[in-house]
Length: 513
Ligand code: HEM
Image (cartoon, rainbow, N blue to C red):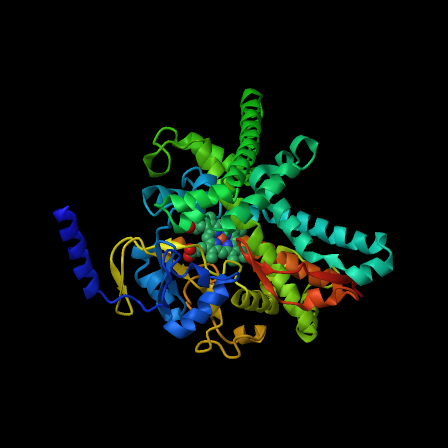
């Protein structure tokens, strides 16, 4: 007992010498949890305006460092990246990633490093982004066809009064692209029809990963676990996990059966450029069965399933949300929409569609993408990190196992770095070299450092191709009904920060001269 008291006193003495970051006063038990609100990126930004860009909160039982300035972000994401590059273990991600066998939620270590390196070379490489170009092109053309036919089949009054639901069209587009890139042409049409249950489960996974569990804020206390049971959170997580797992298993079995048929017949092995990501992962698993998988561990089906989760959860929402925000901003600034349409139509002429090869010439499109990601980074608070040892930021002491949130949303609107930060002004990127690739800490929609998003090129290609074609093929107007909702920029938060009301706009077919 005496020993315990002595130890506690020692810790107190140590703590009293430390200089912790400032933060708001906290309540018993919940700490500052009640201050997160419905839009945490905005509440945290307001709190940081009062307490500073390096701020310490107590969220339930978890000390949480909130970073809100480019300078502090540089320290966390670059200078001290080696101290801040692990992830906290959170309940939902842990289950859906088969106990952290993925990239996004795995703790920093040999396993994560090997897995990320392997996926960067084989899954997210420039070569694979090029190899999947046709898939994006086919699916974007399908979306354009679906919008055109909605003009033709609906009575003109319905289309002009309600418009087309672009939020839904874009989510469905990125879902179809991700399915085909991950599972190939045939498997995603499972048994002849798209497996609707899988799509439902993907959305459920996104919802579960976007909402913290009680046990994430009270990790060592039964109150968190009780809250999760009472809210039905555990049951939802388990159902979603089982649904996804069963579907992944079918996909893997089907690919293995196809590979063994190829081997037993005289057919040659599939060419690398024709492989989907499941083929690639199965090939890597086969190659590594001798030397051991990532981090020296066995490479099993679970590793592959965990990567599937990252592809869907990371790959679908953010690109769709980016295009939706871009269209919402452009409809409110018709002169900017016209300017972009003119550039696209001049460049593409009467080809009938924008191809990926055209995108490099569309400089204003690139500026619009950047400006959209500055004002509306889909992952406004990045993905949480955790400090690995005691370190200092701006002279403040940060203890090990402190959760770290980088507020990319607040950083992109910092008035010291951006003129008229709240304005949608793509031209601001005209004469500057600021990019989102992790070198400029006033603009970090994809994060930076070791944990930077590896799907950046694939995500941007999806978003830019979709946006360019929507603007090439149609002129857009506000619907006569629901106009309020179309121009309303209210947000809601899940895994991404997206538009609260679905974006409905009226398409008018463009006929090239
Ligand atoms: C507009 C599109 C996208 C945005 C804005 C975005 C944003 C982000 C952000 C902010 C992070 C966390 C970075 C950090 O902690 O510093 C991240 C990580 C990640 N993203 Fe993306 N992402 C996008 C598209 C994609 C796509 C298409 C994929 C997959 C196909 C993907 C897969 C991942 C993965 C696997 C990680 C985890 C990296 C790690 O922890 O090492 N993302 N993304």
